[in-house]
Length: 471
Image (cartoon, rainbow, N blue to C red):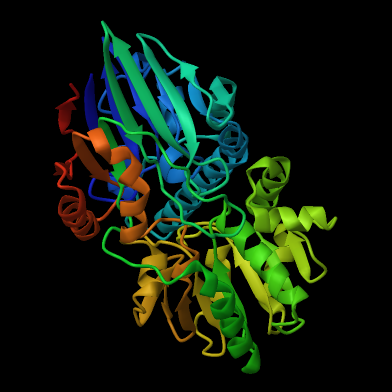
């Protein structure tokens, strides 16, 4: 058994790890690499293996940095099964279609801009830009899914089987236990995917896994300690009340899967308790609206707090102040609407989608607040806002950042250092090696030191293309 690391190594994007077993090739995740345009294009289009040589993909969850390059893999020849939990399979349909639509629109915009520059006799590319993949490519992925319930052993080939344990990160997210038995020998490998936190809205707490021989562990917040998740409602209420007092708007970039639904649930609770003013709340994301329907379908994965809404005959994701925006004209009309109000829109890292229009129209007004609710990767617009750069570029135009920027890290779906150490404890009794992925170098290095100190384990932070024999 050989393990090769290709993505989300010393970075938090493009999750993809290769597992070779007796001549067969499996991928753990096939995520989209997000970053500088040229580097992202090269990384996403050029696989380090022939896609038609991959026998199966095992998917930890539906976030685009874990699932988003499946259409490219399929377009280039992969035709095997994609194994995932039932909720992950349901979420990937709308998410991959939306990702493809954004790639198509991005290529269309760049081609129009090049055409305008050529008309003005300015330097511009002569070759048209092609989308990374199309909606048709995304649709071709969906028949390949082989959904399985949590805690169900699913046989693969060559004595290999996998089982999903609830990772508590987003709906349907899983830590994968892979077991290989051959000639009386057994090797157990755990791939954490993204590990969630206890007491987050909607999702159940991360499940305990059995002991294993090897662990691939995320390290997104490997150097950080979160504030207790219980304070998130107080902080959200304070941000809204403070901004409303000065007549401003609260602009909330949010991932359409998980974070948008958590915010809606929290706002529902705050509104019911009378803790925020009676202002309009807009969910301006067709994808988030569609994803919310998938959440409604999988109530079996809710935590106890969310189930209480159902017991009272209420929809957790709908209340009178909330308005769902699908139409483009309605979205544009929000730019002319006076505050105060809240608008939640994707994408969560401010790299595409309707949030860019809301930011362009609002970040130069000091009455407004930009509320960042999730991790922001290096070089993204979201990271630049968190770093409070005095000027940022939106649609190629320089914009002065005068709005308040507030972060709500307490809502993070990623476990912090102490939570990761506690989560991995049941896995450690026979653990031979830990591989740290999905973390920037400083985060991974801090977590590696903490694991060595607490558990006296061999910890490796792999580089791209580095391989290891699992024996």
